[in-house]
Length: 287
Image (tube, rainbow, N blue to C red; front, side, top):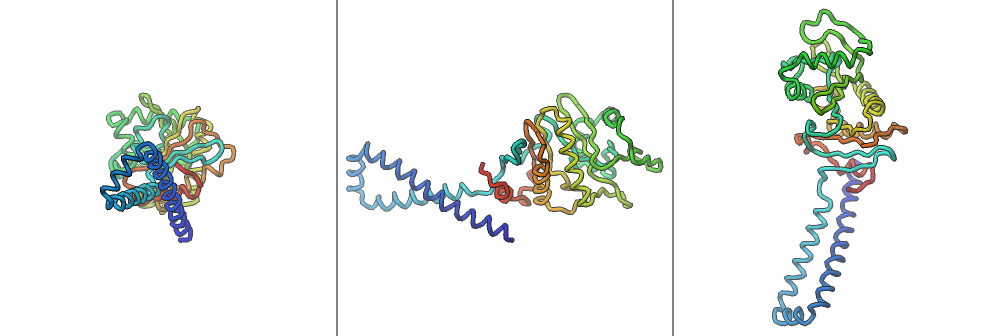
């Protein structure tokens, strides 16, 4: 609540500052016009004296509108998180991104979209349906090849559907398809009721491991990540908290270098749940 109050006060201050800036700009503009067309303007207002009042009201109202527009709810941010990492936050389609795309998956790296093992509404499910819908076998081969040097923590032979090998949370498989590269991040595990879950401490560790991995394997390409942990992951964190932690994780990596930066791409469905103005306040930056 304290931060919310501070942001409101900052908005008020910014509104007043911008209002007087716009007043100054419009005054300068009309002063120049007045010098150029002094006689015509003077003659017009002499004949239409009431128009002076209308003119002042209209100009004042426009400046109020401009000032209000300047503190509107933000839809994108451009942040210098550290001296070596620049981040953009905006709403868009993750799969249209250029560069490396991070896909949160479960710790079995499953490839079956049946709304039981993998929901078609998740990023994981949408990724498979979009790029490997008719070739699940190819995806499985690419995942296995990428994970060939990583030791599984368990081989669950009793598992009736899906993959048998389970990997540590934070493990990343690199999958390339056509002209795109995907980092499949093991984010969740299945509980006794076969629901995906991850504890808050595990989530924090996974995000930190992701950035360690991207620094070593991104090869200078931009990293595009969704709001990791949103949806079916069971993190029990709000969308706002998830975004804040992802950004905060970058600041904790003093030596993290991502030459082309990172884009955090949000789905339009979370617009009402995220306040980018608050994020902007944290990092004290301007668009």
